[in-house]
Image (tube, rainbow, N blue to C red; front, side):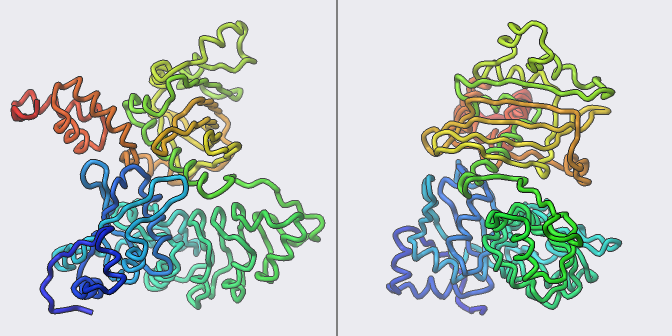
Length: 526
C-alpha cells in the first residue's frame, strides 16, 4: 500500500516500542509500517561484536513466522551495525513485542533501534530479484540438468547485498519460483548447508521432474520433515549431517523409514539399495559433529574469523586470539614422491616424533605465547584456505573450555604452489564479554588429498577480499593502540584509518605514510 502521507522518519527504541504494542497514540508509526514504498533501517547496538550471519539469523528467528529480508548489512559507528528492509510491518511489530531486545543464550542480548521510513524506494533503489536470478543462472548446469543451491545465502553475488537464507520458507519458495522463470527444468537439486528445518517449499509442482535431492548438513530433526517430498519420484537422496540420522539404531530401520516417504528410492547417502537391506553398510559417522547449535555457531564463527585473519599478508592481528600462555605445534606428513619444493618451512617446524632423531628438539618446536606463535606462523608460506571444504568436530565442551577440530584444504600462494589438506585442533577458553581465546593450537599438514577439491576453489581464492567482519572490540582496540604508537596520531584518526582500510593494519600504515608524506593530514589528527 503506497500512501500520500509525506515521508518523515520516525525512530523506535526500547522506550517507544512498548507504546506501539499498546496502541498508545502511535498512529503515525503504524501508518509508516504499513507502507510498501519505503525502507526501514534496523540498527543493532554493538552488532559488530558478532558475526554477521549470527546476528541476522538471531533476528530472523525472533520474528518467525513473519517475513524479513535484510538488505545491505554494514557497520555504522565504532561497533554498531545496521541493515534496511521493507514490506516487514508484522516483523517489526514482533520485534516491538520484545521491546526491541533479542535475548541470546550465553551472550549479551541484541538491542535494536528501528528508523521507520528511513528512505523511499525511489531514493534508495535495490533490485533484489535480478541478483537472485543471476546467482541461480551461475549455479545451474544445463548439461547435467542440476541446480546447486549449496550455501545459497553465502554466494558472493548475493551475500554482500542481501541476506536471504532458504531456511525462511517464503524466501525458499520465491527462489524456486524464480528458478522456474529463469531456468530449464532440472532433475538434481543440491540444498546442502542451508540450515533447513522445514521442507514445505519443496511441495511444489515446479519440482515435478526432480530425481536427485541432496539435503546434507541441514537441521532436519525428524523423518516426518520429508513429508513435502512424498509426491516426488526421488531416486537418490542424501541426508547425512541432519539430526534425524541419529534417531536410528540400525541401517535397516533408517532405510525403511526413509522409503516410506521416498518409495522410488534407489540410492541413500551414496549407498545403492538394490541389494537386500541387511547387506547394506551405512556409515555411522557424520561429516560434522556439534553437541548443540550454540556450540556449532561458536565453532563456525571462530573458524571463519581465525582463517580470514590467518590468510592475510600480515598475521600480526592473530596475536589477540591467543592466550598469553598458549601453545602451538606443527606436524607434517609427506607422501613418497611428493614434491618438497614449497614445504621447507613446514619441514623445519615439523614436530612429528617419528621423524625426530633428537627428541630434545621437540621442546624447541613447541611454541609458547603469542609472540613465538605469530613468529612461527609468519615463517610459513602464505596460504589461502578453502572455507567451503571445512568439516568440524567438537570433541569437548563444558562452556568454559571447547575443543574444536577443523579440517579441509588450503593452497600455498606462489607460482606452482600446491593444494594441501590440513587438520587443526584448537582448545578454546572462555573470557569475559563472551569472547574466547586459543590456549592450544595443534596444526597438522598433509600432502595427501583424501576428499575432492572444490571446482570453484581457484576462482573463489582469486576473488576473495578477506574482509574482517567479526573483529571483537578488544581486537579493534589493540589495533588502534598499535597504529597510535606507530603513527603518533590520536585515537580518533587511528580508528578512521583502520575503518577505511577494513581493519588491515599494514594497509592502514601504508596509507597513513602516503597521506603524511603528501601533507594531507590536518594538525588535529595528532
